Image (cartoon, rainbow, N blue to C red; front, side, top):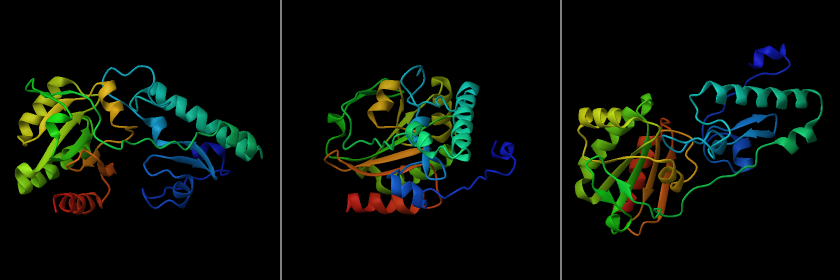
Length: 239
């Protein structure tokens, strides 16, 4: 798309967690899109919240839809045009708010496992909990689930792993969970449930909670540092 501006614009990619611009705006997740120093799209704009989501999600959700892609391309082209025309203040007026929404504690929601059992926050009291938000259509998610399985086997009952499948068919979730055979609590994410865990804009998303149910760490996507950083956080929580 940038090539369509005849060399007047260029695309620069910055690593997750290593962007000076993102840090300046307080954006701690991804993706975030800037035109010069104007924030065009935040992680929340790409947020998706579960199968069946229609209204109230991010501006460019669901991520897989053609309509969302076209909406994003149109908005980005308009912002580039404004910057190139010197109308920076107009661009800033249309810029996305730097909103970061996370959770401070395990939300008061009731999850239904694939086995039909209900799971509430009270059921997880006193446990260190890892909540993995994933999707059957996400290639990196399978690898992350396998790694989490190793972590769970290492710590046994000291660590509880709850998985929440986003925008995924139940049959596909059942098939994959059966193939992996991992000792997790497997659940399906409705829009309401997923929204309760914050603005989810990337899969996999891993959220860690301490024994008191307080949020302890969050990891978005599958960067090279994920395993080392998450394992260190889990080890600290289990002390």
